[in-house]
Length: 406
Image: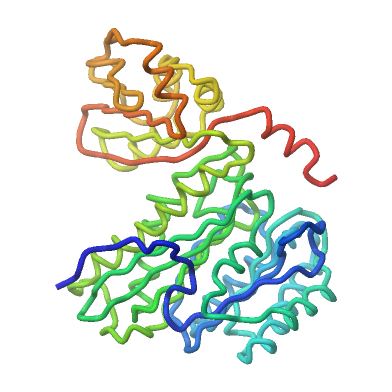
């Protein structure tokens, strides 16, 4: 019988057995103390792999190369990532550099180039400094406790690392699912988020993992909004190396649903961390929608609320202007019936059955001044439900992005 899913305190990607990681500073980003801008991850054994990528039609050649690698179907052993430069919008040279980055990293990791995935994040329109990339491969020291270094090496405007993990007993074996992510701006994903890497020591059949990952992404990272913009480099990858010794998990097996639930939990944790660290953010915004006609409608409604600039501004000002919720619901594309709508702010009912409910405004303002603001919506039409995450919109967001490249 599967055991309970337990969140791992201090969990990071190398909490999963058989994975080592490391990071270093090579000079791609402007120097500051403790800054890193390049990292690598290696599994001791070949991994089954699943991934989803940006739906942008203008993508980084790193994304193009990774798609080709995954289509080839061979097991993957590791990945290399740089931050500061996105390797996007640079023409054919970007693909040449991505291929070279994979080859250089593979040599450093002692594996084949086809076993390495390549990721870049940062400024668009700048070529990769390959001399610095090669220097980084030589300098990175992989360690079983190196997950935090990898998380730091991925950061751009992030103010903190994003790391999470869970453990659960499956098939008599204790397995770990752990991940790291980066992202603070240019986040309105159509797949996952800017960059998110997950490792598990469970044995998982590749076809099963690839079948479930898009839906998990749609319920977690795809329900995140910071600023309404989608990156050219968005990537989510999951690597499973089987070091836990369990029987391989496949679709329809007794452990399949628990594995999916555990992977979802990790990505929910990372999604919340990404939203909380949105550029300039002071508060986490959560939109919980129930009673929608179906899941698709619930997702539309929740994500429209989380991405509304007016609602984000109201959260920043701790203003319980619930008319903006009605506005968002009316334009989201989901089926709504005004006379059935219930609205809540941090658990306080402000509309029931489409009619305003008297509430103590100062009390709700005080609740909204906390670290987290939750908008609850019940459309009372059926059983569709979804949650979206975002953050408030502050003056600091404009400051950060008005001079991002200078």
